[in-house]
Amino acid sequence: MEYRYLKAFILTAQYASFSKAAEVLEIAQSAVSRQIKLLEENLSEELIIRSSKKVLLTSKGRELYIAASNFDKTALNIFEQEDMRPLRIGLLHGLLESWFHPILSTYYKNFNRNMEVTVMTPLNLKAGLGEGQFDIIFTTENIQSELITSLKLFDERIILISRDEIDQERLADYRWIVYSDQDNMYKTTKVSSKSIVQVDSITTIVNLVKSGVGIATVPAHTIKRSDKLFTYELPQFDDSLIYMSTLNYKTMPKHIKEIAQLVRAD
Image (cartoon, rainbow, N blue to C red):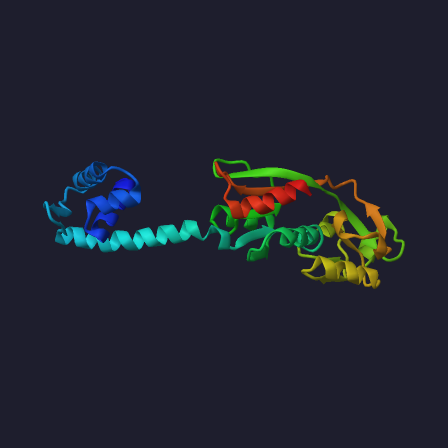
């Protein structure tokens, strides 16, 4: 069933006139009649009783008109309200609390759109994008498939931070401040600290280190010069890459294109 056939039928039924439907569609009246005839053939049902004076709907025609009109209104609402559609973004916690802040500020100097920002793990971000939960995600995984495509943005370097100078050979002797049980601190040494504080906020982790509570591993971009912390390179960690991922659109929707162009220009 072609949508143009259905549209011709809806307008003809609405105005009870082939000529009025043709005027709205800006096509010939004979084309409207032909499209409705093809629709009837596709459905194997007579929808309209034709006469020289008026257009009458059959019982099946009336039922289809009600259902098709509701569908048409819903479809138009979906596409006509794209400018008001909220942008759904998923990203890693460290990116939200550092890198994404200035991008968000710049975005709202140029656009006015509702936005939903959610923090998740790389695995959940990938699943959420594939399931339609997000419009765009920023993560460490390069996802290339028939459904999803990724663009490399920048390298993310992991560093060790402390308020005071430490002995890197004895990391287990210090209190650790970690984000989760998968934190990079657990990969820095074979022996774990007996004193561990788990906090699911990168900003809080940095602040606790600044207060002398313990040591932590964080992405380098989360640390400012004004933090006045000791930083240590961790050569055992390869730099992570940060990617921007979206569904593999032929033509990217406007509300996603806005933020994607801004990120690429950053």
